[in-house]
Image (cartoon, rainbow, N blue to C red):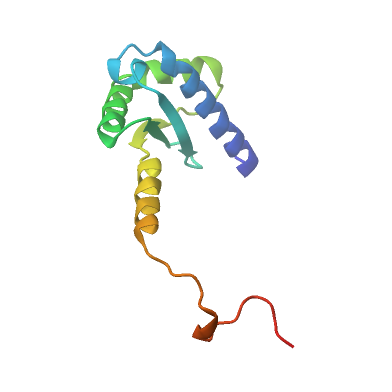
Length: 130
């Protein structure tokens, strides 16, 4: 399978899973703002990693991942009915906590006390002196 076809298939699967989220009745999915941040399909169509993020904390994300694992059969049937694939990959739901990680790193950087460049310190600006 060509690489561009795999990327197109990946986007189609992501779109179908995102469209199926409102139909899942589990409180961890229906009661939260759940989004599919990234989908990765192996080139042999054996596995499909689905990265899930939830607005809130990591516990909510873990709850949504477990609920989606329970609803995997429903999601597979929906994908099969809308996308024609030669092989249906095994769905693997993973938490995507990149937003929390970003906020943590930003907080650390904000706490650093970086003094402004002192003209007497020997460092020159980007401008060259002639």
